[in-house]
Amino acid sequence: MTGEPNTRLNDLFGLAGWSKGELARLVNRKAAAMGHPQLATDTSRVRRWIDKGEAPRDPVPKVLAALFTERLGRVVTIEDLGFVRHGRAGRRRGSGTDDTPDGIPWAPERTAAVLTEFTGMDLMLNRRGLVGAGAALAAGTALSSAMHDWLHTDPALSTDAPRFDDPLKADPAGFDRYEAAPIGYEEIEALERSVEVFRAWDANRGGGLQRKAVVGQLNEVGGMLSYRHPDPLQRRLWGVAANLAVLAGWMSHDVGLEPTAQKYFVIAAHAAREGGDRPRAGEALSRAARQMVHLGRPDEALDLMKLAKSGSGEEALPRTRAMLHTIEAWAQASMGHGQAMRRTLGEAEELFVSDRSDVPPPSWMQMFDEADLHGMQALAFRTLADHDPSAASGAQRHAKLALELRKSGHQRSKVFDYISLASACFIADDPEQAERYARQALEAIGSTSSHRTWDRLWEMYLLTGQYAGHAKIQELREELKTALPKQTKRVRSAQV
Image (tube, rainbow, N blue to C red; front, side, top):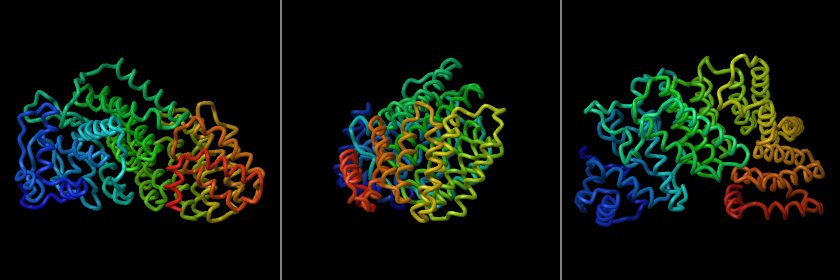
């Protein structure tokens, strides 16, 4: 007991709207449902947790996390409640600050535990049809500051997972660990193939339909990481965890679950570093940066990109560095920094062509090809065109090149290319060409489940307003309004 109030628990308690007595009864009832019928909590004990900082014994923290997750409709972890997991290294309750949100970075032995708990809670929200809303995104600057020193040091793989024959080590999952077992090379190869299947589905259809499957697979991998494997196998397993976490984050971002997405990107960076893959950790953080640009926070995206680029280390391939440069350029374009954007895109092109392909790219970079390079350049120029309309011509040129180079199976990216191209034509005062490309975007969008696509479609719709007097454009506007989900129109209208 610290004698000081648990401010985190108190804040969540206030949001939940329970009385202390009601929470005590809910804890007892939930604990019994989770297999702990002997637990007996009363109002005075709840008061001590909140007002005196008393840390309840297991299994109460996991019971409380489950209750608040259900009540608030977003994932609430044990750390979110202000509790420290018993038997493992980490910061004391309340040690997270503005510079180290939620105690980031985690001690190595906590990564599998956080991964398993967070995915378990996310799956529980899925089962109940709850929405991951109400949580706040951590500032990009805070994440970057918190993770800088940690990402620039080498992990100690020997602490990846505790050894269960050591009586001083606790179960890393911190709560109901499913019956995982040590795995071999055949199993890890099957897991790696499953990542490729999920990645291909996401590229073609968007994240909405497979997100739950990816989260479930990641949850199982977290259980596998509870066991000690030979180092080469352990590294590959961490790599699978990193790849699945990036996918879970990207799919969450794709369907508008922004705080959930950010958490997965941070988990992915931790998992990649534990596996000794610093370029993968940097790429995971670059996803968080792309998320920030999409949400209108490019300055924070640039902070994250500095860390992603420096943290990737010298082993990052030129193509990887080129991809990171395109994201940085998009953030610069969002701020209207045209000269900086053009310089950064020029560096990206030089890096891309300098990649001799003598070293096979990692699986997570195989999606970034020449078409993606032009697609990101088109997006950057189209974004800059909001500040400098002359940039629209560059957006059109790169979008057309991207469309010419797109391979099959990249339907969502093709939709983005058409939207960038149509939007650039509207800005360049060419409504006839814009209408043609916008209809191609509409034709292609029907098979995707991407909220990001709808968001950009809404941005294109706003550009049609000045041409509402044209008969064809007016018809297009009606079709766009019909195609856009009502929730997207309502949310984006409130932001404009």
